[in-house]
Image 1 (cartoon, rainbow, N blue to C red):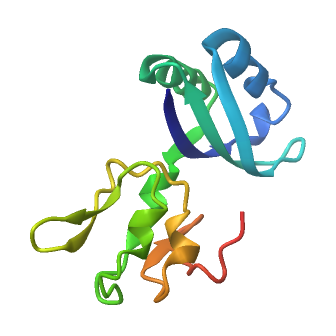
Image 2: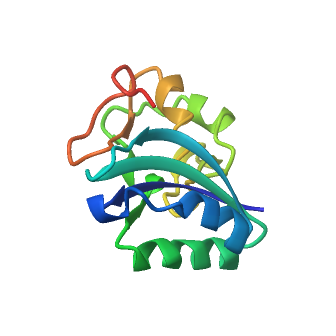
Length: 148
């Protein structure tokens, strides 16, 4: 099962389109809406987790959305680690379901592999020094301010 979290920004012209329905019916994609700000005839924002039996059907569904004018960004692109604040405690590695945060042996350093990150953000609130950060816009915000 292929799972990723995406930020969708769609133009006001598409706010009345049944695109979630089509993702399910035509592309066999499961979804979990994590946050949505959608009003008719206004630009919309949605944070959505997409699950598909393969990366291919999720990619096809995303291509469908792009053809509607939807701007798509992987949520993982909005998660980063502040290397200066991180003191290598490893708390984040215990909650990371994708293996993007792991202990590198033999030096026992904590590594963040952004390519493996699904953007679930479980690491953000668990970090005792707030070294894991997430942003929904161009400004980075810390775990105590992040609410989905």
